[in-house]
Amino acid sequence: MKEVHGVCKEIQVDSPQIQTSGTVYKLNSPFTIKIPILKIHSGDENRDSHIMEILGYPDIPEIIVVVESAEAVGETYLIRGKLSIHGFTRDFQSSGKVEPNGVGQIRIFGKVNIQFSDFNLERPSLLFIKTKEQIEIGYDFLIKI
Image (cartoon, rainbow, N blue to C red; front, side, top):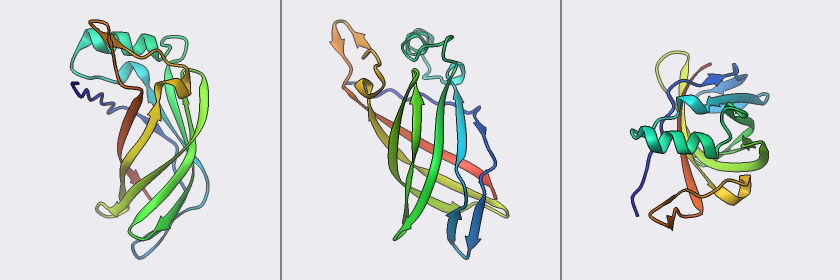
């Protein structure tokens, strides 16, 4: 089955309170990331339109992520929080990496796996073949500290 990538380059991020000690980072308080559904693009306008409909746009204009904690585990971080899609909020956890990216900025990247059914989402289909239930969401953020 074909793999499809949707990308959103225009997000809103609260200013996270991150404490640094060398190359170790500590999140002092939760922060929110808002992903506007209208700004998610896969390179196919018809597919994007259908995905927007599945995600509840325009009634629900964004996906909301609340990052509640990030705990160092070896060379990675266990990131936990809440993910809100289509009006449903679920806990999530992800193994992510954090690395310095110039002065006063860090890069946070990793993956979160969810399922369409976790958020009561219709699975898209093509020629009567449904997509797989699991969705892998990759993230890659540059955050000022």
